[in-house]
Length: 179
View 1 (cartoon, one colour):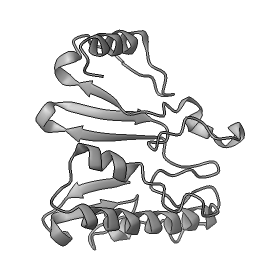
View 2 (spheres, helix red, strand yellow; view 1 turned 120 degrees about the vertical axis):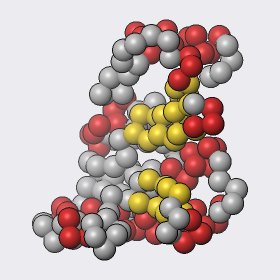
View 3 (tube, one colour; view 1 turned 180 degrees about the vertical axis):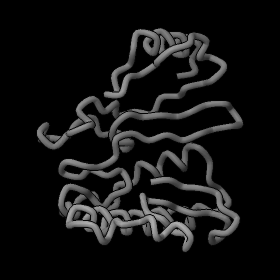
């Protein structure tokens, strides 16, 4: 799911949920034609995109970083039975698929807000067999401040683990009360 400023969209905003919207790009989108799994994903994505636009339109003119994190963490329709492997909330808790990570860019403060796993704060599901890629979900948003990232290297790995470099960074920003 992505939220964007787009001068062509309604009120200059647009929500995307893994679907092509432009007429030029729609021929590349096979999500509703290939197979049952693709169809299920198409239905979920369409539902999430509509919810994203609802949130954007409700916040138009007042959207800031905190509001963006709330949008990405939205759980409306989380309790709706998953369609195949995917769920219907923006913070997607599908049975075997869903949100793997989320980020919000704050260019004014040169900060990337990042969370691995579900962005809504959930740590783990009650059924570990459906956690999939989210077995290491953080349950919190962490700031990655460019000016504080003084060491070159990986701060996290592909599985959501904080590396030793990342641990040093987090300790440093925590002591400066940035975290």
